[in-house]
Image (cartoon, rainbow over all chains, first blue to last red; front, side, top):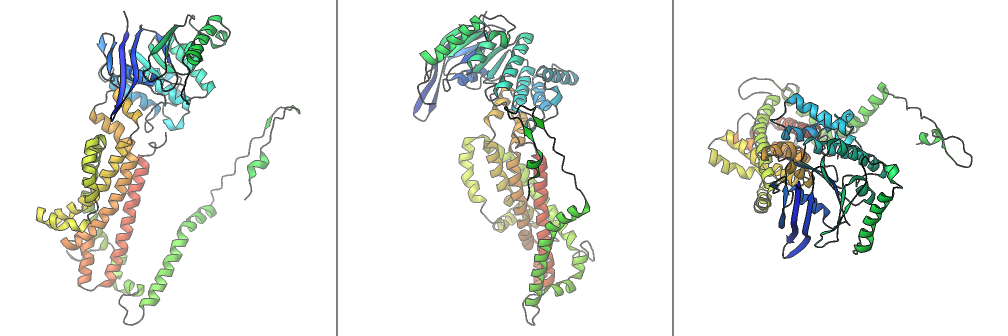
Length: 263
Length: 297
């Protein structure tokens, strides 16, 4: 049975008298524990699709069902890691995670249990040492890790990552990708990740959803990534099926759906 | 000025010579925290205003020492208002008290009026900032009302409250509230969408959103509004007290004018200036303390 079901979803924005259709007829089924990447050129509506699943924007057509319940509003069962970390700068790292934990587990966990849970999640992303620092005092990669810890601490049914590593330098990005794979294999979360990095998509995902260019973008192709887990970045660099997947995505993006508009 | 760092750092990593890169650790600049530098720093802050003050007093003394001048020179102020200057807290009778006590009475009124304006202003500003329609409807009205001078409110508040005490406080309140409302509104409108999304994902209710996201995020704006407000309150209190009477510093000036004690007025003016300055700095200080992590992103 499908865990998350996106069926014939469309989204158009109306401003004044002009209506622009961003997404059309999106159909996507995701199993529990799956890691799915959504890739496409910028402006194709990837983030819009993620916001629809998160419930932050409403669908114009179709519907989204998560574990037999329709998505109508945002909620902590669909935790989002935003592209620019969106930590609250006036709270410490600990308090940023606590904001989520205190809200989600207000009744179900005692104060001591909540504390342990916060620390456990900070340890998971290796940020426990900086728990009293403010977001302004830590690096971009660290902020993103705290953002991931905050999202994981909500114990979401599905984790939504909106270009989580996009703003980071290549080395930090690789490091965080490895941590993300490790967390995924340990906790078995269901993850949807927006990305525009082909290697990132192939390395992390079970399936890669490739989007056509907008306006009225839709899913062009879905690629299964038949690589064994755990995956090793170095070994995969020369792996035949890895290279084949990579080539398939690149061909889709740059041959069949070239970005025509000047970026 | 020399640049010592250049001379000391030797980082050689030229490939053809191939020596291991040597990184010389720079000696830390010796911490000099002696009395001379501290005294020097204090002097640079204090000396210029003191010099200017001395010049002003001298000119004032010279110009107004001629017989028949309309205003008293500083020496006469010192001689005639000696009691007021040296002891701010004397009590000789119910209407004959030190200026410090009068200022405290005025400050009490300001505290009530300004406090009400701050609380209500932030609440109203928060509501308006959240709603586009409220903003469109109310902002033009507020922009007009805020330009009404403090004293213009007095007759109508006297008519409404039929008592001078509450009307003085109302005048302060109505003068001080506009900058708080307007700045809070702008602050709330400028809350990044990211923070709002976080709140929505966490399903924070209105109260939680107000205290955990809105107040801290808008705090820098709110405090710049409060700082303008406290200045306006202090402006308004003097004017209001002149008309309503009582023991405040404003009425003291009016009373001194009626009994031609010009030197007392001059002393009172200095009091008002100094207290206004302290109030402004106080709010600024609280603001910089409260908003310390907010702008750092």
